[in-house]
Length: 220
Image (cartoon, rainbow, N blue to C red; front, side):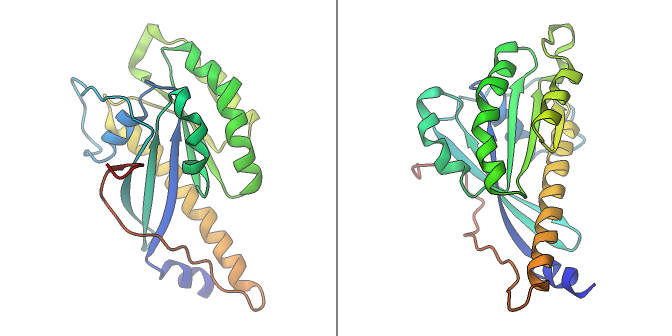
């Protein structure tokens, strides 16, 4: 209908997505994979240095006649940087929480820390999309967390989805972002149409400075 078409015709739609999780679970590795071809099967993986505080990159995604311009914030999992975390999480449209399927402690910290951390953001922004990610699904017998256990945790805390990824298969990472960005777009679309239907209200228009530059939080 006309309202939906008007929102799509905005073309560029800026969004903010944040990755959370303990240090070393593979957040930076996942983000490095999303810019590679979907069909790539990796034989060896590049080692990534731990993120210092926070870095960001921009992902442009055509969808349904519009272009999602998503700024993805890659946060450090180190405890010394956690006091700064709200600066990066505030204003997000989506959160991806990553744990390592081979490290039970990282899943335990999802239950004991990260769930409590994201809950206030989910309560203050009802359209927030939260996806739980079990990374390194190629681990075979070294797996310490069952798929049903992780999916149940996501369901109990009203996360949108639970997804497993491995950077040996780029398709799993692309599927993660397909799920997250599509839902983020659909929720925005519904909210924007709802605003347009309200008397004397204006369509939701988010403004964001475009960049494809990878940078640290301090501009280094």
